[in-house]
Amino acid sequence: MPTARTGRRCVVAVDGPAGAGKSTVARAVAARLGYIYVDTGAMYRAVALLALRHRIPPDAVSQILARLDEVEIRLEPAAPGEPNRVYLDGEDVTDAIREPEVNAHVSEIARHAAVRERLVALQRAWAREGGIVMDGRDIGTVVLPDADVKVFLVADVDVRAKRRWRELLDKGHAVTLEEVRRQLIARDVQDRTRAESPLRKADDAVVIDTSDMDIPAVVDEILRLCRERTARGEAGTDKA
Ligand code: DC
Image 1: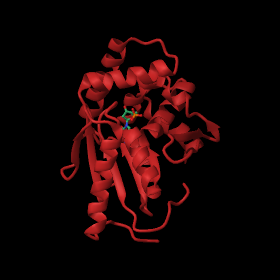
Image 2: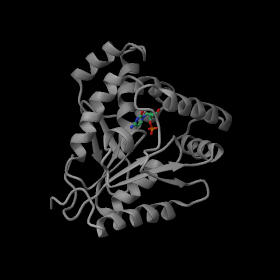
Image 3: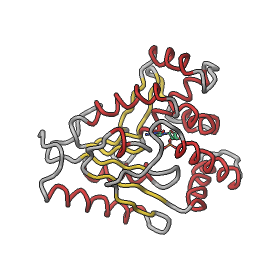
Image 4: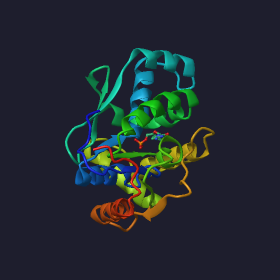
């Protein structure tokens, strides 16, 4: 991963359920601050795609790990405010990891402790220099428990389902809102109830309900939290 701009740099953790607006908000915050953005969900999706392509059942963890040993997962910041581009052994899988088939399998892959361990090691290495906004499910609780700013985004389930449905329609997928809603709820239940690093608000995270907020308002609130930390001289990294 390339290094971010120099200066007093925060580590920002953005967690929450699917469709709460995490990636849009996290990308915008990173762009405004000149920080790196890391979409950790994309990494779990890349592993799910890998398993699907090799016809490995989602519960065959040792086979998944063996495949993981052979490939490199790389995230690249495309441009400020843009989604990460995701590479699996050099192949651009940015679009492939958003396919409905991956949506349907990714939670089952993400519940394996051994898979998480590998991805978390990469995530922590990328965050070492600060100047990073990372989004996921366990960033504030497990990956970066010392993050300077932790936010937990939530939104009404109908709002979240509608957001995901529109995204899929825009990409040309013929899915019904009800189908998307059902899948989203199933994924939430799985992410919240799994034994390993479940989706949970960190005790020191700030909850922001995005149901009736527009993106710029949420971004401004997070930037305010970052300024507050920096002004108090508490930001974790000052390695300019
Ligand atoms: O954010 P997303 O929808 O792209 O995430 C895909 C899946 O990966 C989702 O089911 C939860 C899982 N995930 C996770 O377990 N931990 C993370 N840090 C990020 C995502």
